[in-house]
Image (cartoon, rainbow, N blue to C red; front, side, top):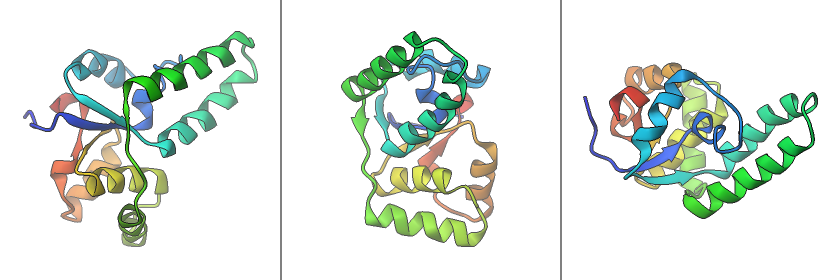
Length: 146
């Protein structure tokens, strides 16, 4: 089923290739489908990506650092910024109290909700949580639904 939103907030997994790091096949297959969509990023995702990247950089050459910096520039130049609002923080905390313990995912979904965006994610646990708790499903999409 295809959803109509063309304003997509990218989950962290979709920023990693721009930063020079491979990710899952689900993400890589979805990348060509992003053309024509208005793409958004969150500082939360950049921080989460950096947490993942620095673990790998310890054992990789210094040139990789420059690739990450260029990737951050590319993200900032080619995507729109989705702000963390007070409303998003409130919703993220509510989700945590409902039982979803990944605050990064909670924040990203809540940022999408607060900014009338659709979160593109490969996190099936998050999607299932949203469905089970009857949260607005029109604000989350998986690559297969693009």
